[in-house]
Length: 324
Image 1 (cartoon, rainbow, N blue to C red):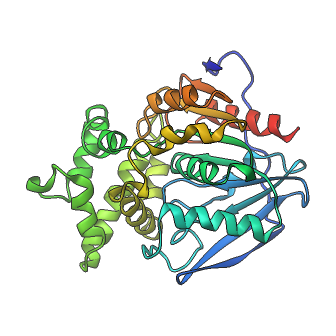
Image 2 (tube, one colour):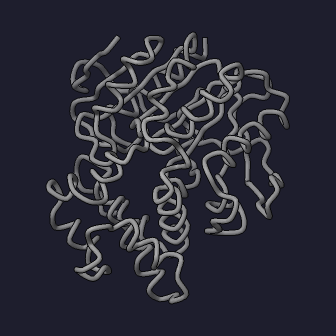
């Protein structure tokens, strides 16, 4: 089923009140990585896991608040190398399949048989990879801003596509790269983000991150762009995201859509903004066709970010519905 919402017909849901974790810690996942985790809500209530975006974005306080704390027991964690996980911005043993294994380690650590998996943007990619690998441990999926990490999607955002919609921002994104290398922006950035020139590395990290910060919302949000440009955030975000994308997520092209049949029997909600720049709506549409158990909600007046009012409304309605 597909619905299209304009935001105007109903009162929009917003975040639940601020909440602090009732437990938190670090999990040694091997390979020198320590992953930060936290749990919020009511111990023993419906289990859920939140998968943040990026890759390399980390969790923040608002992510705790898309679930009714009286009805959910939510695990949130910072994926390898970002947020409060260590070592910071590290790329070693940091792949999609390492992260899928980390999700399983957390599930086993907390003795959870099945949980709702919530992921947006890159988090939707990871959620699909996890659910297709471990469908027996997934009760429901709530996904936003579908990204299936095909070459076409990567080219659309980093080479030609969004460049046509945001030419002034794309010019800033191109600025650190010599004209002769701009035919492969991901590779040119990769060489600098993994190089030895620390000043150039930081400048490129900021440019990479702020390109994303400037294009994820329907209307400009300069505070968000500033947040994406913070040194600590930008280094992890740009290095890890570029590392994953230059390697195509260690996925075969089209794999997540091809293997959508593995989601049979898992109820799902897909929420996608009509004017999502990083993640074109076409891929959410295609996923909904390949996964009949999912409902697709297209939000007309929205871009990519979870904070878009219409997107947030649909996400909270989904978690409320699955809370039972």
